[in-house]
Amino acid sequence: MTDPIDQLIHAELRGRVGCITLQRPRALNALSLPMIRSLTEALNRWRDDPHVLAVVIRGTGKEGPFGAFCAGGDIRFFHQAALAGDPALEDFFTEEYALNHLIHTYPKPYIAFMDGICMGGGMGISQGASLRIVTERSKLAMPETNIGLFPDVGGGYFLSRCTGFLGEYLALTGRVLVGGEAIAAGLADALVDSARLAPLWESLANTPFETGEAVERWCQTYQTKEVFRPSWPTVEVDSVFGLAGIPAIMSALAASASEWAAETAALLRQRSPLMLHVVLEQIRRARTMGLSDDLRMERDLVRHCFHPTHLGRSASASETVEGIRALAVDKDHAPAWRPAEINSVTQQMVDGFFRSPWPAWAHPLAHL
Image (tube, rainbow, N blue to C red; front, side):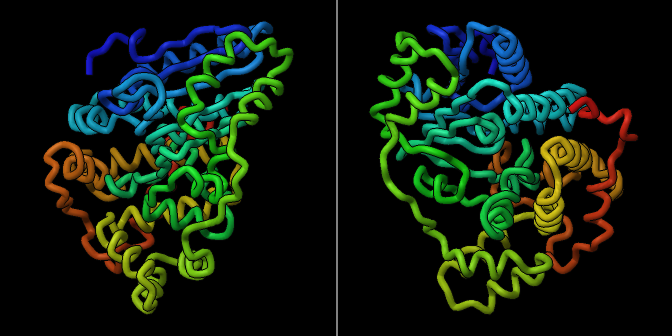
Protein backbone atom coordinates (compact mmCIF):
# COMPACT_ATOMS: atom_id res chain seq x y z
CA MET A 1 0.00 0.00 0.00
CA THR A 2 1.35 3.42 -0.89
CA ASP A 3 -1.47 5.60 0.38
CA PRO A 4 -0.38 9.00 1.76
CA ILE A 5 -0.31 8.96 5.53
CA ASP A 6 -2.83 11.79 5.80
CA GLN A 7 -5.29 9.50 4.05
CA LEU A 8 -4.53 6.51 6.27
CA ILE A 9 -5.24 8.26 9.57
CA HIS A 10 -7.54 11.19 10.10
CA ALA A 11 -7.16 12.96 13.45
CA GLU A 12 -9.35 15.96 14.22
CA LEU A 13 -10.71 17.83 17.20
CA ARG A 14 -14.52 17.80 17.27
CA GLY A 15 -15.89 19.88 20.08
CA ARG A 16 -13.71 18.92 23.01
CA VAL A 17 -13.06 15.36 21.85
CA GLY A 18 -10.02 14.20 19.85
CA CYS A 19 -11.35 11.91 17.11
CA ILE A 20 -9.14 9.42 15.27
CA THR A 21 -10.24 7.39 12.25
CA LEU A 22 -8.09 4.64 10.74
CA GLN A 23 -8.57 4.82 6.98
CA ARG A 24 -6.90 1.84 5.35
CA PRO A 25 -9.93 -0.35 4.61
CA ARG A 26 -8.30 -2.35 1.79
CA ALA A 27 -5.88 -3.73 4.41
CA LEU A 28 -8.50 -3.82 7.19
CA ASN A 29 -6.66 -0.84 8.72
CA ALA A 30 -3.50 -2.88 9.36
CA LEU A 31 -0.91 -0.68 11.04
CA SER A 32 2.17 0.58 9.21
CA LEU A 33 5.08 2.41 10.84
CA PRO A 34 3.89 5.81 9.52
CA MET A 35 0.43 5.11 10.98
CA ILE A 36 1.96 4.26 14.36
CA ARG A 37 3.93 7.51 14.29
CA SER A 38 0.86 9.52 13.33
CA LEU A 39 -1.18 7.99 16.16
CA THR A 40 1.59 8.68 18.65
CA GLU A 41 1.92 12.27 17.52
CA ALA A 42 -1.82 12.93 17.83
CA LEU A 43 -2.06 11.38 21.29
CA ASN A 44 0.95 13.29 22.57
CA ARG A 45 -0.41 16.55 21.19
CA TRP A 46 -3.84 16.09 22.77
CA ARG A 47 -2.44 14.81 26.07
CA ASP A 48 -1.09 18.25 26.89
CA ASP A 49 -3.99 20.26 25.42
CA PRO A 50 -6.34 21.33 28.23
CA HIS A 51 -9.15 21.85 25.72
CA VAL A 52 -9.18 18.13 24.83
CA LEU A 53 -11.20 16.13 27.36
CA ALA A 54 -11.04 12.67 25.79
CA VAL A 55 -9.94 10.73 22.72
CA VAL A 56 -12.00 8.31 20.64
CA ILE A 57 -10.74 5.97 17.91
CA ARG A 58 -12.52 3.99 15.20
CA GLY A 59 -11.76 2.19 11.96
CA THR A 60 -13.15 2.35 8.44
CA GLY A 61 -14.72 -0.47 6.47
CA LYS A 62 -15.11 -0.81 2.72
CA GLU A 63 -18.43 1.02 2.87
CA GLY A 64 -17.33 3.88 5.11
CA PRO A 65 -16.66 4.56 8.80
CA PHE A 66 -16.95 1.58 11.16
CA GLY A 67 -17.33 -2.00 9.99
CA ALA A 68 -13.64 -2.80 10.63
CA PHE A 69 -11.33 -1.60 13.37
CA CYS A 70 -7.79 -2.92 12.84
CA ALA A 71 -6.62 -6.34 11.67
CA GLY A 72 -3.16 -5.96 13.26
CA GLY A 73 0.29 -5.09 11.97
CA ASP A 74 1.27 -5.19 8.32
CA ILE A 75 2.59 -8.77 8.18
CA ARG A 76 3.57 -8.53 4.52
CA PHE A 77 5.89 -5.69 5.52
CA PHE A 78 7.27 -7.89 8.32
CA HIS A 79 8.10 -10.61 5.81
CA GLN A 80 9.73 -8.30 3.26
CA ALA A 81 11.66 -6.34 5.88
CA ALA A 82 12.96 -9.47 7.62
CA LEU A 83 14.26 -10.95 4.37
CA ALA A 84 15.81 -7.63 3.31
CA GLY A 85 17.35 -6.83 6.71
CA ASP A 86 15.40 -3.57 6.75
CA PRO A 87 16.04 -1.73 10.07
CA ALA A 88 12.53 -0.26 9.83
CA LEU A 89 11.30 -3.59 11.20
CA GLU A 90 13.07 -2.90 14.49
CA ASP A 91 11.63 0.62 14.58
CA PHE A 92 8.14 -0.74 13.93
CA PHE A 93 8.03 -2.93 17.02
CA THR A 94 9.83 -0.45 19.29
CA GLU A 95 7.46 2.37 18.36
CA GLU A 96 4.35 0.17 18.31
CA TYR A 97 5.00 -1.11 21.83
CA ALA A 98 5.73 2.44 23.04
CA LEU A 99 2.37 3.48 21.55
CA ASN A 100 0.66 0.59 23.37
CA HIS A 101 2.21 1.81 26.62
CA LEU A 102 1.10 5.38 25.93
CA ILE A 103 -2.50 4.22 25.45
CA HIS A 104 -2.53 2.08 28.62
CA THR A 105 -1.18 5.01 30.66
CA TYR A 106 -3.00 7.85 28.90
CA PRO A 107 -4.12 10.44 31.47
CA LYS A 108 -7.40 11.20 29.67
CA PRO A 109 -10.25 8.86 28.74
CA TYR A 110 -9.37 6.95 25.57
CA ILE A 111 -12.39 5.21 24.05
CA ALA A 112 -12.00 2.48 21.41
CA PHE A 113 -14.85 1.63 19.02
CA MET A 114 -13.86 -1.98 18.24
CA ASP A 115 -16.46 -2.61 15.55
CA GLY A 116 -15.65 -5.40 13.09
CA ILE A 117 -12.27 -7.10 13.05
CA CYS A 118 -9.93 -6.23 15.93
CA MET A 119 -6.92 -8.48 16.09
CA GLY A 120 -3.24 -8.35 16.98
CA GLY A 121 -2.08 -4.75 16.67
CA GLY A 122 -5.74 -3.69 16.77
CA MET A 123 -5.95 -5.16 20.25
CA GLY A 124 -2.76 -3.28 21.08
CA ILE A 125 -4.41 0.07 20.38
CA SER A 126 -7.67 -0.84 22.11
CA GLN A 127 -6.99 -3.00 25.18
CA GLY A 128 -5.44 -0.07 27.03
CA ALA A 129 -8.58 2.02 26.47
CA SER A 130 -10.53 3.25 29.47
CA LEU A 131 -13.72 2.20 27.62
CA ARG A 132 -13.66 -0.66 25.09
CA ILE A 133 -16.80 -0.73 22.96
CA VAL A 134 -17.74 -3.73 20.83
CA THR A 135 -20.73 -4.48 18.60
CA GLU A 136 -22.51 -7.56 17.28
CA ARG A 137 -20.05 -7.41 14.35
CA SER A 138 -16.89 -7.38 16.46
CA LYS A 139 -14.33 -10.15 16.05
CA LEU A 140 -11.51 -10.00 18.59
CA ALA A 141 -8.46 -12.25 18.67
CA MET A 142 -4.74 -12.56 19.23
CA PRO A 143 -4.05 -15.02 16.38
CA GLU A 144 -0.27 -14.68 16.23
CA THR A 145 0.49 -18.37 16.77
CA ASN A 146 -1.06 -18.91 13.33
CA ILE A 147 2.01 -17.21 11.79
CA GLY A 148 4.66 -18.54 14.16
CA LEU A 149 4.65 -15.41 16.31
CA PHE A 150 3.34 -14.73 19.83
CA PRO A 151 0.57 -12.43 21.15
CA ASP A 152 2.57 -9.22 21.43
CA VAL A 153 1.49 -5.53 21.76
CA GLY A 154 1.00 -6.18 25.47
CA GLY A 155 -0.83 -9.45 24.86
CA GLY A 156 1.07 -11.12 27.65
CA TYR A 157 -0.15 -8.41 30.03
CA PHE A 158 -3.85 -8.31 29.15
CA LEU A 159 -4.36 -12.00 28.32
CA SER A 160 -2.68 -13.19 31.52
CA ARG A 161 -5.19 -11.12 33.46
CA CYS A 162 -8.21 -12.92 32.05
CA THR A 163 -10.06 -15.14 34.54
CA GLY A 164 -8.42 -18.44 35.38
CA PHE A 165 -6.37 -19.84 32.50
CA LEU A 166 -8.48 -18.33 29.74
CA GLY A 167 -5.49 -16.22 28.71
CA GLU A 168 -3.42 -19.31 27.92
CA TYR A 169 -6.29 -20.74 25.87
CA LEU A 170 -6.79 -17.54 23.84
CA ALA A 171 -3.05 -16.99 23.37
CA LEU A 172 -2.28 -20.51 22.18
CA THR A 173 -5.32 -21.05 19.96
CA GLY A 174 -5.97 -17.52 18.69
CA ARG A 175 -9.71 -18.16 19.15
CA VAL A 176 -11.91 -15.38 17.75
CA LEU A 177 -14.36 -13.79 20.19
CA VAL A 178 -17.51 -12.02 19.00
CA GLY A 179 -18.82 -8.96 20.83
CA GLY A 180 -20.62 -10.51 23.79
CA GLU A 181 -17.89 -13.14 24.21
CA ALA A 182 -15.25 -10.40 24.45
CA ILE A 183 -17.16 -8.84 27.34
CA ALA A 184 -17.47 -12.23 29.07
CA ALA A 185 -13.70 -12.68 28.65
CA GLY A 186 -12.97 -9.27 30.19
CA LEU A 187 -11.56 -7.91 26.92
CA ALA A 188 -14.36 -5.40 26.29
CA ASP A 189 -16.57 -3.23 28.48
CA ALA A 190 -19.75 -2.37 26.57
CA LEU A 191 -21.73 -3.63 23.60
CA VAL A 192 -23.40 -1.05 21.36
CA ASP A 193 -25.61 -1.92 18.41
CA SER A 194 -23.60 -1.14 15.26
CA ALA A 195 -26.51 0.91 13.90
CA ARG A 196 -26.04 3.34 16.79
CA LEU A 197 -22.33 3.97 16.26
CA ALA A 198 -22.63 6.74 13.66
CA PRO A 199 -25.16 8.78 15.69
CA LEU A 200 -23.02 8.34 18.80
CA TRP A 201 -19.88 9.48 16.98
CA GLU A 202 -21.65 12.52 15.53
CA SER A 203 -23.07 13.48 18.93
CA LEU A 204 -19.56 13.83 20.36
CA ALA A 205 -19.01 17.03 18.39
CA ASN A 206 -22.01 18.97 19.68
CA THR A 207 -22.58 17.68 23.22
CA PRO A 208 -21.41 20.22 25.85
CA PHE A 209 -19.10 17.95 27.85
CA GLU A 210 -17.31 19.40 30.85
CA THR A 211 -15.08 16.44 31.75
CA GLY A 212 -13.56 13.41 30.10
CA GLU A 213 -15.55 11.18 32.41
CA ALA A 214 -18.70 12.77 31.04
CA VAL A 215 -17.67 11.69 27.54
CA GLU A 216 -17.29 8.11 28.80
CA ARG A 217 -20.66 8.17 30.56
CA TRP A 218 -22.32 9.53 27.42
CA CYS A 219 -20.92 6.68 25.33
CA GLN A 220 -22.09 4.16 27.91
CA THR A 221 -25.69 5.36 27.60
CA TYR A 222 -25.75 3.77 24.14
CA GLN A 223 -24.85 0.27 25.34
CA THR A 224 -27.20 -2.69 25.53
CA LYS A 225 -28.12 -3.91 29.01
CA GLU A 226 -27.32 -7.58 28.52
CA VAL A 227 -25.37 -9.94 30.75
CA PHE A 228 -22.87 -12.01 28.78
CA ARG A 229 -21.65 -15.41 29.90
CA PRO A 230 -18.74 -17.49 28.59
CA SER A 231 -19.57 -19.65 25.57
CA TRP A 232 -16.50 -21.84 26.17
CA PRO A 233 -16.34 -24.65 28.76
CA THR A 234 -14.75 -22.69 31.58
CA VAL A 235 -14.03 -25.68 33.84
CA GLU A 236 -12.38 -27.63 31.02
CA VAL A 237 -10.42 -24.59 29.82
CA ASP A 238 -8.99 -24.07 33.30
CA SER A 239 -8.25 -27.75 33.93
CA VAL A 240 -6.49 -28.19 30.57
CA PHE A 241 -4.74 -24.86 30.05
CA GLY A 242 -3.64 -24.63 33.65
CA LEU A 243 -1.39 -27.66 33.14
CA ALA A 244 2.37 -27.32 33.34
CA GLY A 245 3.36 -27.55 29.68
CA ILE A 246 2.28 -28.04 26.08
CA PRO A 247 2.75 -31.86 26.09
CA ALA A 248 0.51 -32.11 29.17
CA ILE A 249 -2.09 -29.83 27.57
CA MET A 250 -2.13 -31.93 24.39
CA SER A 251 -2.41 -35.16 26.39
CA ALA A 252 -5.36 -33.81 28.36
CA LEU A 253 -7.12 -32.73 25.18
CA ALA A 254 -6.55 -36.16 23.63
CA ALA A 255 -7.97 -37.85 26.74
CA SER A 256 -11.16 -35.79 26.71
CA ALA A 257 -14.26 -36.97 24.89
CA SER A 258 -15.61 -33.46 24.35
CA GLU A 259 -16.05 -31.88 20.92
CA TRP A 260 -14.36 -28.72 22.24
CA ALA A 261 -11.24 -30.73 23.16
CA ALA A 262 -11.05 -32.39 19.74
CA GLU A 263 -11.42 -29.07 17.94
CA THR A 264 -8.86 -27.39 20.18
CA ALA A 265 -6.31 -30.16 19.75
CA ALA A 266 -6.73 -30.06 15.97
CA LEU A 267 -6.15 -26.31 16.02
CA LEU A 268 -3.00 -26.54 18.16
CA ARG A 269 -1.54 -29.24 15.91
CA GLN A 270 -1.51 -26.67 13.09
CA ARG A 271 0.61 -24.22 15.10
CA SER A 272 4.37 -24.00 15.43
CA PRO A 273 5.32 -26.47 18.19
CA LEU A 274 8.22 -24.23 19.20
CA MET A 275 6.11 -21.09 19.44
CA LEU A 276 3.39 -22.87 21.42
CA HIS A 277 6.01 -23.53 24.09
CA VAL A 278 7.27 -19.93 23.90
CA VAL A 279 3.76 -18.47 24.14
CA LEU A 280 2.82 -20.55 27.17
CA GLU A 281 6.01 -19.37 28.88
CA GLN A 282 5.22 -15.77 27.88
CA ILE A 283 1.75 -15.78 29.45
CA ARG A 284 2.97 -17.47 32.62
CA ARG A 285 5.80 -14.95 33.05
CA ALA A 286 3.61 -11.96 32.21
CA ARG A 287 1.11 -12.80 34.94
CA THR A 288 3.55 -11.47 37.55
CA MET A 289 4.82 -8.52 35.49
CA GLY A 290 3.76 -4.91 35.23
CA LEU A 291 2.97 -3.45 31.82
CA SER A 292 6.41 -1.92 31.16
CA ASP A 293 8.29 -5.09 32.03
CA ASP A 294 5.92 -7.15 29.89
CA LEU A 295 6.43 -4.88 26.88
CA ARG A 296 10.21 -5.06 27.33
CA MET A 297 9.98 -8.85 27.46
CA GLU A 298 7.88 -8.88 24.30
CA ARG A 299 10.37 -6.60 22.57
CA ASP A 300 13.07 -9.17 23.39
CA LEU A 301 10.84 -11.96 22.11
CA VAL A 302 10.04 -10.32 18.81
CA ARG A 303 13.72 -9.62 18.20
CA HIS A 304 14.44 -13.32 18.61
CA CYS A 305 11.47 -14.24 16.41
CA PHE A 306 13.03 -12.45 13.45
CA HIS A 307 16.67 -13.06 14.45
CA PRO A 308 16.72 -16.59 15.94
CA THR A 309 20.49 -16.71 16.23
CA HIS A 310 20.21 -18.69 19.47
CA LEU A 311 18.74 -21.47 17.32
CA GLY A 312 21.50 -21.12 14.73
CA ARG A 313 19.03 -19.79 12.18
CA SER A 314 18.79 -16.77 9.91
CA ALA A 315 15.71 -14.58 9.59
CA SER A 316 14.58 -16.47 6.50
CA ALA A 317 14.60 -19.72 8.49
CA SER A 318 12.63 -18.31 11.44
CA GLU A 319 9.25 -19.70 12.44
CA THR A 320 7.70 -16.26 11.98
CA VAL A 321 8.94 -15.64 8.44
CA GLU A 322 7.90 -19.17 7.49
CA GLY A 323 4.48 -18.72 9.07
CA ILE A 324 3.84 -15.45 7.25
CA ARG A 325 5.03 -17.01 3.99
CA ALA A 326 2.56 -19.86 4.34
CA LEU A 327 -0.39 -17.71 5.40
CA ALA A 328 -0.04 -14.43 3.51
CA VAL A 329 2.64 -14.68 0.81
CA ASP A 330 2.52 -18.07 -0.93
CA LYS A 331 -0.78 -18.86 0.80
CA ASP A 332 -0.18 -22.60 0.69
CA HIS A 333 -1.17 -22.90 4.39
CA ALA A 334 1.53 -25.54 4.78
CA PRO A 335 4.24 -24.06 7.01
CA ALA A 336 7.35 -26.18 7.54
CA TRP A 337 7.67 -25.79 11.30
CA ARG A 338 10.97 -26.70 12.99
CA PRO A 339 10.81 -28.80 15.08
CA ALA A 340 7.74 -30.40 13.54
CA GLU A 341 6.70 -32.22 16.72
CA ILE A 342 5.71 -30.80 20.09
CA ASN A 343 7.80 -33.33 22.02
CA SER A 344 10.91 -32.35 20.03
CA VAL A 345 10.99 -28.85 21.54
CA THR A 346 13.57 -28.48 24.31
CA GLN A 347 13.58 -26.05 27.20
CA GLN A 348 16.88 -24.69 25.92
CA MET A 349 15.21 -23.65 22.66
CA VAL A 350 12.51 -21.83 24.60
CA ASP A 351 14.82 -20.17 27.13
CA GLY A 352 16.80 -18.44 24.40
CA PHE A 353 13.76 -16.35 23.46
CA PHE A 354 13.67 -14.85 26.95
CA ARG A 355 17.29 -13.71 27.11
CA SER A 356 17.41 -10.03 26.27
CA PRO A 357 19.77 -9.15 23.42
CA TRP A 358 20.37 -5.76 25.07
CA PRO A 359 21.77 -4.68 28.45
CA ALA A 360 19.04 -3.04 30.55
CA TRP A 361 20.37 0.48 29.97
CA ALA A 362 20.38 0.04 26.17
CA HIS A 363 17.01 -1.66 25.81
CA PRO A 364 14.85 0.03 23.11
CA LEU A 365 12.05 0.39 25.69
CA ALA A 366 14.22 1.31 28.69
CA HIS A 367 12.37 4.65 28.94
CA LEU A 368 8.99 3.10 29.71
